[in-house]
Each structure stands twice: as C-alpha cells, then as structure tokens.
Length: 351
Image 1 (spheres, rainbow, N blue to C red):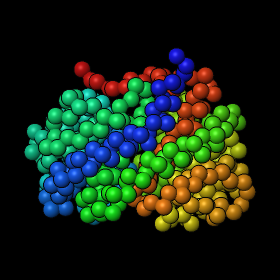
Image 2 (cartoon, helix red, strand yellow):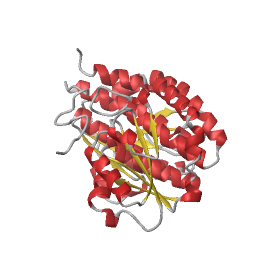
Image 3 (tube, rainbow, N blue to C red):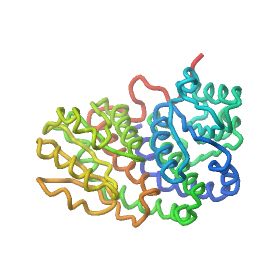
Image 4 (cartoon, one colour):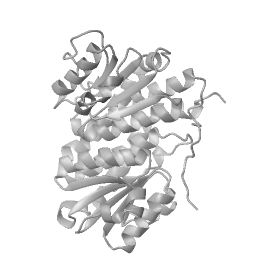
C-alpha cells in the first residue's frame, strides 16, 4: 500500500464526515441545550491530549467569546496531576475530548474530576463503547471522524466542529447552528481549488522551517497544524500568536521559512501587517482567510480564500484542510509515510 494511503482519504473525506456529524448535532440538540452552562456553572474547562488539547484551546477561546462564561483549556495530564493549579472554586463543566476514548491521561483526569464532585462531565469522542463515552452526564459520539492513521486530521476537524456546535447552541445562535450545514460544501471546494498549491508548498525542498500564526480562537488551530507538520514530515515547525511573532521569533525568518497566517476578518489589518513584516525580512508567506487579502501589498504573496459567506465563528474549521495537505505533501516528498509517523502511537496508554 502506498505511503499516506489512509491519511489522504481522511483529509479529503472531511466534508463528508462533517455532514454526518452535523446530523448528530441536530439529533442531540435538545440534550445539549439542557446543559445550560450559563445557568448552572461558574466556568467551563476543555481538556484533551496532543491534538485534542490544541482543539481544547481553540474551543475554549471560541466558547468564551460566544457565551461570555469563563472558559479555559488544559492538557488532561495537568488536571489529573496538578488539580490545585487547574480548578477554581465553583461548579465546573468539564468537556473532555478524545478521538479514541481510550487515552489514559484523559480517563484519569475525568475520573478524578468526578471523584472530587467538581461539576458535570461532557465527553466528545469518535468511538462509542469506549471508556470515555460512558463516563459523562452526556456523551457526544461522532463516528464519522474515526481514522486509521496515527496523525489526526478528519477526527480533529470533526470533533472541533462538535465544540463549535455546542457554542452556537449555548449562545442561542440558532442562525449560526443552522449555517453549519453549509460548511461541507465549502470544504469540498477548498480541497479541489487549493490542492495544487498545497502540493507545491509541501514539495518545495527550498523550505526548511514553518511558522503558523493564529490568534484568539485560531491559536489552537495554528498549534494543531504545526503539530501535523512535525508529526507527518519531521520538519521544524512552530506556532505563535500573530502579534507575538514580532517579539523574538521573527529573528528566525529567512528565505527558506514559510510563515502561514490564519487571518481573521475582525483583526485582519493588524495580522496583515505582521505578514508584511515577514516578507520585508525576506521570508515567504501564505495567508489563509475569508476574502481577498489586499492588505498584502508588498512583494509576492500566496493565499487561500474561503469566500464562504459564513460567520467567522463557524468557519474557522476551514483553515484546517489546506494546512493538513501541506504537511501531508511534505511528508511524501521526504519519502516518509504520514500514516505512520515516527515514534508515535494512535492511543497513549499508561500502565
């Protein structure tokens, strides 16, 4: 079987997986609404390990922005081993995310949370019947995200979309919840339109480092895409907040560095200025965003335009497929197998 056989299928089948997940959201809508976090809890904590920790960062930022309740994200190991520096007084809604539902650290964090009677547990996973999917007051299972590859792509985006649906429901934004159904069609178009650009960048042997910039609800997504580049292609890759890139990290900019910006609409001007700084220093830039990024006025530029017409709160998932493809193509260009990254296991189990 050719290298990357499963990962390729999992990246390109994401829109189909999202469609199936959106149906699950609709079927479980009433149960999810019954949690009423603003009325029942003082705060929300999202947790996971590896990719799902980065998912938690993105979900916490978006959920707090949308519903106004304090939301934070921690690796599951921190909740398990350092609860004193993680939890605060008052009832907490813990949202635990795991692709497999078997990760030891996540299971131990959830059990310790329940033993301490700190609040209510909600779980998100892709595999029903696994330990995590039986632990919560409510357990949201999204089987369309299941994967055979070690590095998460389809699972990550599908589970992330689950947290977006939760935020829309809890914010009372029925309009945004209904608009989720339009995302798969845009995802299909992006994969078709930008496959050649992702291939070109991924196979460019002149690049030796990658920097992923994202702020607010997009920081966690930048972290995840950076992780994909590390896992699949064993390349130097780091994520940063947009504005923080100027405070030291820009010293690493060179003609062999590609800086990928997950650009917002609300702060696009400030983020464009950072990317223009990178170009002025001789670095290469790829900008991902909703519309044409005319603010990138100096030098050559490459960009991915969503042109989705969707609210920024629900379209963030669209940053993922092209970024995943760049990492995938780089892995293949180096003769690696992105299905089986070095030294990694699909599930981390402690004994």
